[in-house]
Image (cartoon, rainbow, N blue to C red):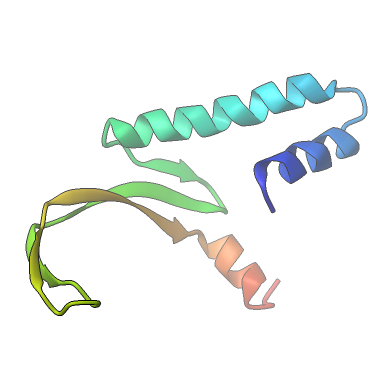
Length: 94
């Protein structure tokens, strides 16, 4: 599902809300999650999962095309860990 499909689904399920308001709400939620993660914070949505940032150390990698070794800089990457309710639902336990 993409963002526009999510907005449309929420708008369809809540006819008392205007689509532009639903779009603003969804964008605000994503912006807040992004801002918190950019500051290094963890965002937890109970029953769904937790977003966090993990640090990957610098390392020596290899270019798969040429086989040449390259230095890969340290970087921060987003990480998502599913919550128990989501994991159980995906595995048909609920």
